[in-house]
Image (cartoon, rainbow, N blue to C red; front, top):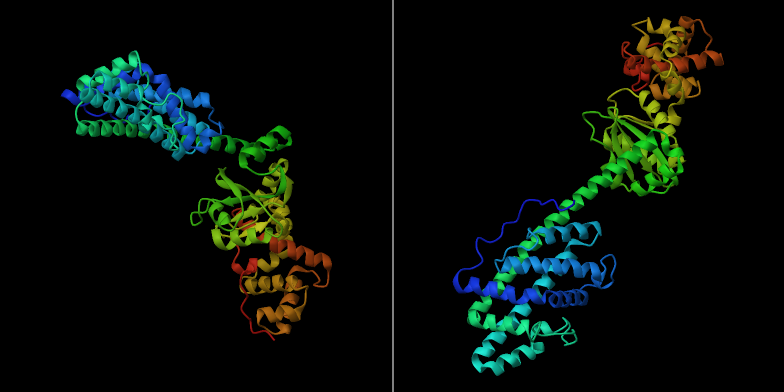
Length: 484
C-alpha cells in the first residue's frame, strides 16, 4: 500500500479560538525550529521504553528518527493550525502504519511509540509554558533561568528518572529558542490554559494514532492477500505436477509452512450440500495440518500426517465432516502431489455421490480399475451376474448373500452367522447363483468374476444405469427367504 489513504480521520472543527488558538499557533511555531532536537529526545525516549525499538531490528535508529521527525512535524503543524508543509497532514501516520506492518512490528508497540512521542512533545510545550509564567513573575532574569535551567522539567529526564538525556530542557535555550519563549510568554494564560493545551496535544496524537492503525491494518490485509494468492498459486502448481522442479517444491513448502520431505496425502472431497465447505476446521481441531482449495467443483486438500494418523484421517472424514472423499496413498515428497491428486480423484469416483463415505485409494484398487473403464465394468456385470440381476424376486437376497459369503472366505457357517440364517440357506443361495450363471461355486475364477461384478455394480449406477439397491453393495442384510 503506497500512500493510499483510507477513510480519512477528520481533524477537529477548529484549533481553538481567541487566545487558545493563538497560543497553540505560537507553541507550534516555537517548537518547529527545534524539530531535530525534539526528534532526538523522542527517539531516546522510545528506545528507553521499548526493547523492540532499542534492539534496532527490524527498525533501525535511522528509520525511527526519520519517521518520528515526519510525524512530529505534521502533528505540530496540525496542532497549531498551520498549513501542512508536505501537503498532507496524514501522510506520515499512514507511512508509519504501512512500514511497521511490513516490518511485522506489533501494532501495540507502534501505538506505544506514538504515546511516548506525544508525551515528550507535551513535556516540551509544558516547559515553554512554565518558563513563560516564570518570566512573567520574575522578569527577564527569571525567564533566563527558566530557559537555561529547564533540565529540572519533565522533558529533561530520560524516561527512567534520571537527567541523562543530552540537551534536556527547553530546546534552543538561546537565540531562536529564547525568541520562542518570548512569543509564548506574550500569549500564555494561567494553569487552566495549560490543561487545555494538554488536551489539545493528546487529541492530535490520538487522531494520528487512529490514522496509523488504520493504515497498519489495511497493509496487513493486503500482505495477507498477496501471501494467500502466492500460497494458492504454488499449491496449484504442486497439484498440476510442477513440483518436480526443486525450486517450485521449495517455494511451495515455504509458502505452506511445511517441509519438502514429510508424510502427506492428498484428499479430494465432493462439494456435498450437506457437508462443510472443506474439512480443514475438523482436521485442525484434531491436530492435523491441512490446506484446501476448491478445484473443478470439488475440494482438493493436502494433509500432513504423523505416524499412525492415516486411520484417524479416514475416521474424521467419514464421521465428522459428512463429505464424500477419496484419499491418496501416502507420499513423502511434495513433488509427488500431482500423482497423488490423480489417485485421490480415482478413489472418490468409486464412491456413491452424496454418500458421505471416505476411502483410501489402496482400499479401492479393484473399484478404481473398474471405474476407469466403464465399458469393461458393464461387461463384467453382464457376464458374471446378469442372470441373477434378471431374477427380480430373488435378486436382493442372492446378491447380499454372495457378498457376505465372499467376504468371509466362502465360509457358509460364518456367512450364516452374519446373515442370521441357517447355514443351508447360504449354501442353497450360492447354489442358485451357480445355477443361474452356469459357473461352479468351487471355481476360483468364478469367485473372482463374482467379486469384481459386485464391485462394478455401484459404479454402473454412477454411470447412469439403474442405481443398485443396498443389497447390491452389501450395506444391509438380505431377508431370510425361509429356505431350509
